[in-house]
Length: 88
Image (cartoon, rainbow, N blue to C red; front, side, top):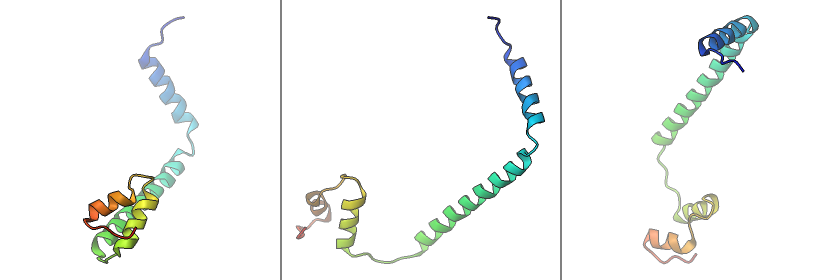
């Protein structure tokens, strides 16, 4: 086997991609639109969460921690964290 020059390989790859990518501008535009929508959604969500202040009941928060944190919390651990011996 003969070693291939990285410079030659890169140039060939670039030349191949530049001739075969007629729709690449359209793809890039669609990708850019998707990415900007995603960024907007994330920033808007963060702003809404930070600006909205509402209280959730302790029992709801305990239940949520138990069910959605895949075994990271137990009822006894939640009682110790909350500093009281609840009826759970």
